[in-house]
Length: 497
Image (cartoon, helix red, strand yellow):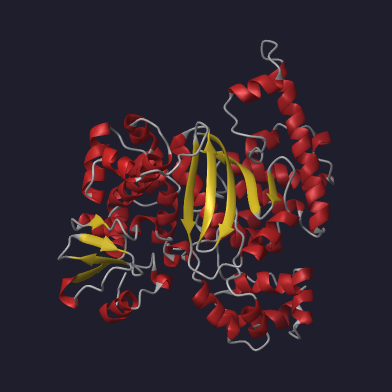
């Protein structure tokens, strides 16, 4: 990643928080690294180095600033939207793949050798996959130290460290403090109540139009899975090591998140999925500047700055929602999805109740479910439903089963780090999945920022409301001026409708 020194230094001198996460400022005279928006006195030019990642700064022997907390900055929007190998790798590392499967597992997911993957990440991020994962472990450990009363040994393994010694050495190196000192420094901060409960702040680049996000999620909320109440979005999660539940409340400057996890090893994946769901790593200034250049969209951008693309915490869930939502209203799709989840809950309860006479609710609690909300059903669970559990036409039912089989056997990868073009190609090869569904998934599950759903009825109505062309071919041609942010234009057209 090439960084122009003068541009970076100007951002630091102006303390421009829009650049937080884009790069990190290393101060050689103090041995620390900071966010561009750090409120400390601007360092002299000769004492400054710029790094593309926190891991690169740590690799240069610098420790994190205690004042601006650079390790808690928003993620880079560059890696959030890029579809190449480095962008995919960064999303998978954030989701904890290196902690679970090691570098060999990450390389296998991406289809490259470990050596070549290390070379690519080092060239662009200034650090290899192990160093990037290590930086994330350090941040996870700090969150657990400051927000829980867990023993240090428990925190070490929950954060992904292989040993307590490795945990101690890393935190001393990154924060210039022993883990116990970090806990002492938290002062009178009240740790959240309840085992597995963690409270933290999710940073973003302003502005954030939180009402648009909550409105979008509320109208599609599925009973038992998610809910929007009093300005807070609640939902259940399926995570690599267990289940979870999250409450997300947008406030000025950050999103307050409270997570309840059955297994604390899932903290980093849960945070990554929440950030992805709310599109918190986007660069709204760049997006709005492009869209506001169109006179037809300019009034909406001025009135509602910071519109985000609501994404997904689970690719399979989003694919099921997309297939069921084809050519029907949002309300109708929600009704069908609720019926599907009710059938799954009934089957699950019947299976559990046969296990040594233990009631479904008792065993449900023993399994460590953290609350009333649960995650969406998985591919294997969908395949286990009887025909009567679907409540939809045969063609749509079989399309869902075909998708589930493709996910189970690995034919289709719906993870955030999937190859977008390859995933779309394979989705289109499945019966019952057309261009609208595949492109909708590219936008919401894979995070492609440049998708225009020009055939969507609500998009066409929104275009007509703004005086824009409202037939797919003419709208496609007109929308070329919105590149590379056509997904954000799609959301604005939906709102205009």
